[in-house]
Image (cartoon, rainbow over all chains, first blue to last red; front, side):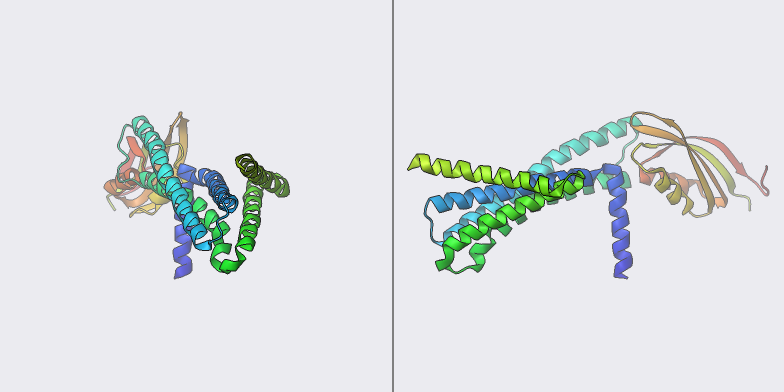
Length: 200
Length: 88
């Protein structure tokens, strides 16, 4: 029963994907926005660290606010941008076919693509940023130093995994593409610490 | 049987709409035994297909509904066969 339902849903997804080509866009935005979210959270945590914030509750509040902001930003941004683009494509197709596509499965595929892309765009930065914030939820307040260090380490792992995923998609070396994103993260860390050095 | 037994129609469909989906959906319609779809012309966004449908009592309204629901459109009816026996 469940297996046949899932099979039907998978077939429908594949059909919608054939029409809209959404999986390609979703793959790209998943990594792009996931990296955005992870890097933003790393920036917030490094900022908290150099500002000597030693209360994990404050860090959690800052982090959660950031995660929500990047999530909502991804969701709404993608929703509006994707809708505008898809509507333009639909209108062009209606013109070519000399008919309205309202109520057709073809239009349903486009509507699904808009929603799915927006959800992935919203959830990928939200999830990646929350993963990086996780140590502040599980470690004791006295272990705040360790929480900062663990978060930075988790951020590097997230960067590597996102990069490795890109490598897999492009059939390049997963280690190399993963390492490139880790380098980008390290570069960001360096810039933030340089800023700290300038302000002292 | 005295309904439509063979139908040849010109269908225009979006280029990214798989022909196989259109053919399979048509084959599921009531009274349809077989469907043969051949792409005749490919344009920038759309392509035209010649669709041969055979059956015992093909419901023209159903065929039209399936085609329109999927997002394609009938451009014209090229050939229609009906009666008590098949010709050719």
